[in-house]
Image: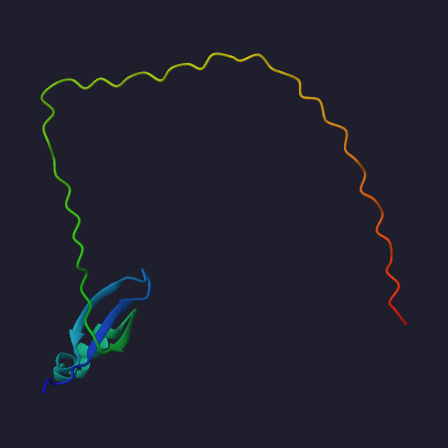
Length: 102
């Protein structure tokens, strides 16, 4: 049976970034002075799982061997402005009140 582990997430309070995640056994093995130095300006959270990102972004550099030319945007020709006249709007008929049957 797998042993359930607990981890401590160390978060820098000033920047709000996760500094690191360590095993709880490593924290308990530290001396009191080391624990005090570790917790200054930081928040410690006990977590049950250590999550690591599965996506890694890599940028690749390529050498440009020939000059690059981009097509210039075409200028739109000015279209003549056509005046739009409003169509007459029929006024809605007033609603009649219904008399409930007595």
